[in-house]
Length: 292
Length: 159
Ligand SMILES: Cc1cc2nc3c(=O)[nH]c(=O)nc-3n(C[C@H](O)[C@H](O)[C@H](O)COP(=O)(O)OP(=O)(O)OC[C@H]3O[C@@H](n4cnc5c(N)ncnc54)[C@H](O)[C@@H]3O)c2cc1C
Ligand code: FES
Ligand code: FES
Image: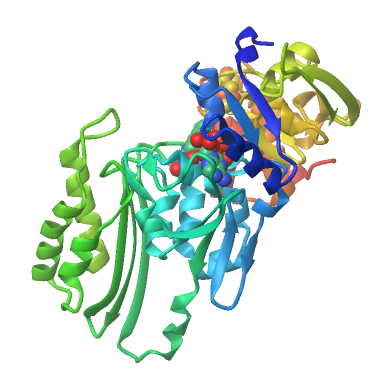
């Protein structure tokens, strides 16, 4: 076995209490370990700075997807495969299903988890834009107690987030608020779009990721939610673009205004995968497609 | 080793026990400790699928699985795909269709294809592409591999 493994330590927690206890006793000393699809890559590359890991894999309380009348709760250890095989996710949260389908390939989907994707905090991650559109809330736990935070305010800088060293993400809650569509008038139209723009279909890191939902009433924008990945230090909700078109009739003027407003929401950069200019243009095109 | 643990699991229907660091890669335990060298290492970072095995029936990249998480589980490697002398339908189809050239990707391809057919006995060509999207091949250009999966699907897996 690799000799350098000796500098690492991993302990398997059998329940949530045990994991939280370890995290709280020496805050910052232990790092959570879920499916390992991010951490094992760093380990092999010799770029894993943390030394001690608490393995969450056996904590059953963190598994599963459960629905109540007004929300769906996704356990932090739910994998992409779990998302793809859940009938309620498929029926009511198609952007989440689309994101899961576009993440990695089968072997990654079988191991990568929702909690790991969120905590890894890559601005290029594919699931977060879908979660933002649905107004997700995170459930965080520590030995001090539990709290809920809106996902939109969770990430506040590159790899910086509202998660204390002794806290775990235990679940993600999606409100089931959009069920009432059938009751709306004849002129009502609901659209949802998920687009991952990459170099190839499988396993590629996004150049840009776009998730949106829009409700139109006789061609006038009512509810609109747009979220993007790979265009800023964190995944972002495009609040200015949304604001610029709300209660406006769709048409070329509104679209032009929305494209302009979008520039305030995102701050793309040049990197190995793409350029700022390309990202800005594609983001605008995707927005235009949504509103056309 | 300061942090060695005893890990018990099943490989290809036989119980094994190894004493190792819990973060050792399943890939290394299979190849080095258990001498099951059919599982290959390509990239070591989850991109190529050469290290594919089934963990409790599901396709995983063994280069990304720490052995500590395998305790109590069941692993199928390429060595365990055939039933005795009887090749798995996917293996036979790879031979018949010329789906293997250098062979480095083949064990992972066969396991990915077997896992796919297990879940979906008659996949469309698009579903085959998606099922094998995590497996890279530098030799065949993929067409013969897809043909092999279609052929295997027609003869129906013996398992
Ligand atoms: C080949 C390959 C392809 C990939 N493709 C994609 C892709 O297309 N899109 C994409 O978005 N990602 C992709 N990924 C990245 C990765 O698979 C995902 O981010 C995955 O969801 C991570 O989950 P995990 O359980 O494996 O995380 P781990 O590696 O176990 O952990 C990741 C981070 O999250 C922390 N963590 C884990 N669980 C918790 C928790 N419950 N509470 C607090 N912190 C926690 C860990 O401490 C660590 O910092 C890919 C990775 C590989 C290797
Ligand atoms: S060696 Fe594991 S995916 Fe390439
Ligand atoms: S046969 Fe050589 S890599 Fe596929």
